[in-house]
Length: 88
Image (cartoon, rainbow, N blue to C red; front, side, top):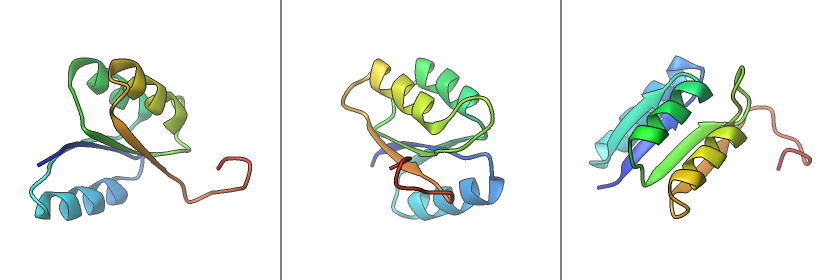
């Protein structure tokens, strides 16, 4: 069982990913913003962070940086509905 943090400013995405991952017996927490996620990462260890790229104030890149600062071995998956070659 992995400890997973799902970060997205769209509640429906949080719920969908959380339900799918919980079915596989993972412990899932959610954050509705990059700032909230960064605060959670400072206090808790996660095996995997799944984050939206484009969010107000704190981007998925800032979430990635916070996760890697806390533990360089934390896996981070960045998702986006507005992808481009430059953002990849």
